Every structure is written in structure tokens, then in C-alpha cells.
Image (cartoon, rainbow, N blue to C red; front, side, top):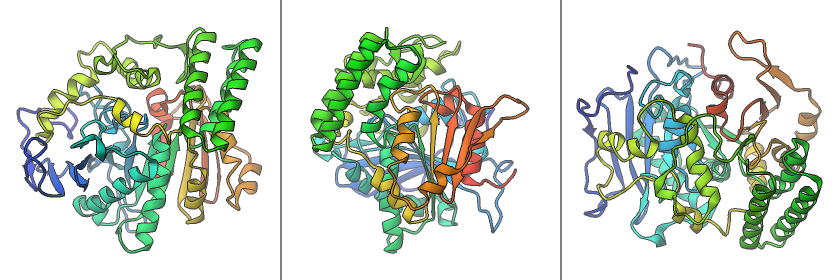
Length: 466
């Protein structure tokens, strides 16, 4: 049994800072709990009045955790997308955390290469909560301000960060927009002396950095892989052009509506291509389907897809569902989750609160990070549609970074994994910009290609050899 997991009935939880929660009202800004041996910590930070972010830290087992003065052991903070998806649930138990949804050890956990922090971000997602709807964020920058307040608390609460562990923000999907705004906010706070930690890098996995470029990519990609015909392709291109025009005019709510219409049109004309993997139809995951009943009545089809895709992928012969464990055994283990809080994989309230900003690009923030010297990594699954590789390549070409010409002129290097001689990925790097093309992976790279994803995170964090 994995050393990071102890049965709930036997777990001795140490409350480091105890205070009443949602039902009685929060009187202080931080509550932290954890395992007695320090292998796990978790807690709440009240980042604003009535706004509470939940985080969960895992320390790598000593067998993997090798640190030297010149190469300290890194920490990865995972940011889920959606917007409105739970990193504490999805990224943790369905992608890179120490245990899978059946609470069995995950061989490909990123704990082999870094300590891990999962956050339910922004407020209102997963175990995080707002005491009323007025406390929900309405923009990426508001989310970044909250997450920066969280980082200030974590810099004190997590011993590894206090001791100088380099921090890497690793994001997926819409989480990329959170990551770049948080990255810029964090660097500014560090330079101002308001935040005491080392931001070593930002990694953007299939990230929605430029909605325009992704919308424009759908028709060419799906034509090339025979999921649209010429007639549907021309119509889809016209719809994508409308999205581009509305974004240029600053009509972001209208652009979101047009983008949603484009996705619906593609669904109807492609016989239901799965926008997270163009080799599949929606609902035709290789393993059995386990839908999230909590989201079954949502009016947004895309949030349904996001909340169920990985649950379908992870479902095996085991008995557990992500909703079941997060509202059952995990909630019992953590002990500090308010009794009247129900965990959902996706928050429709959070999605709707952010809807006016979903289509805003964040290319300028990537440029700012590069200008600060922060390492920026872009990685993309070959089979993704919603955040396609050709869309990611297009927005990278729009960077104003002075190293871009040299970056694009370099050849890609093939990557392999383990004893396999089959090419798993390509990478191109110049100075502090890196791009990984992950083959045979869709939107959720660590779930589709766990071996190469683990190798990639080792390179990104420059983890000392164990």
C-alpha cells in the first residue's frame, strides 16, 4: 500500500490550526491539517472575506526525494481547467496524484519527480467555497489575486516552500489562463518583496491561451482527419471567423456564444467527434461510462463533457467513482470539509461567473513571463481538438518575445520512454521557451500518455536523479 495513504478509520489527523467552518462562519484566514509524519498537508485559506480556497500538499516519498544544494527538490502546483473543474479531485485522482480513483497507487504519479500541491481554484470549485455568490470571481485576474494570496499562505505553511523548493505552476486546459495570470501576479509580488518563494516555471498543457486561434483551428484539423466534409468545413470556418471578429471587437460574451454554437455545429456534422480526442466519438471512451449525476442537468454541454471524460477513462472494474470518493472516504479523511458542502467535478456557477472573460486571450501574459526569465513550457496532445496543437502553434507565433525567431528555426528532438523505441513525443527548446508535441494523446496528456508525461515533468522541473 502506498505510504501516502492510510485508511480513514486509522488515520490520525493533526489539526495545526483549528477553527469553525462554513456552518458556523470562518473567524480566521488559515486552517491547516495533515498527517503526523508530514507526508501530507491540506487546508483552507480565506483569500478574501467569504472566499475560501482549498489546497492539498503531498511530499514525495524519501526514496524519490533527492535534493542537493545546487538542485533542490521541486514542487508542482497543479491548476485544473473548466473553468470550474476540481484539481483536488480530477488532477489528483484521475491524472497525476499518488492514488487513482480506486485508491490504488499510481505508478506514473508525478510524486516521483516533485512534491505536489493540488488546488480547487477558483473559489467555488470542488472543496473551495464562497459564502455567497457575490464572492465568486468574474475574471482570470481576480482568480490570480486570490491564488496569489493562497501562495503567500503556502509559502509559510508548506515546509518545502519555506526551505526554497522551486515552484512550478502546471496547468491543463482553461487552467493555462489561470497559470499565466497567477505567474505574472506572483513574479510581481516576489519583486515587490511581498511573496517569499522561487517561481521556477510555468507549464501549459493543452491550454486555452488564445481562444481565437483554437476556434480557427477546428475546421482545418477536422477536415484533415476526415471528421468534417468540405461543406461542413466551409460553414465551420465561417462560424470561426465570427468568433475572431467578436474577440477583436472586445465582444467576449458574444464570442463565447458563437464559439459554443461552433462546437455544437461541429458535433452535429462530425457524427459527434469527441473534442478531447478526435479518434473517438463523444461517449465512446474505451472503458465504461460513469457520468456525474450532479452535472446531468447542466445547460452547458461542454461542462458535461469535461466532468465526465476522465471519469469514463479512469473507470475500470473497480467499484469507485470520483464523485463517490470525494463526497465519501476522502471527505472523511480530510475532516475539515464543511458538512454541508457537496463536491462536484465541475461548478456551473463558477463557469457562468467567468463566462464574459472565457474568450479573452492571455498571450501578453506569456510574453511577460518570458521577459522575466521564467521558464515557460507548452505541451499539447496530438489528438486534441478543443485546444488543438495547431492552435497552440499559432498563438506561440504571435509572441513578441525576442527569442521567437531562433526558437522556430530549431529542429525538434524526438523523445522516447522506457525501453520502447517508438517515438512518443517531440520537443523544441530555446532559452526559456519549450514546446512538447505529445503523440497519441488527447486533451488530458498525463492520463493518455503517463510514461512520457512523467519524463517530461522531470525535464521541466530538472528533478535530481533518484
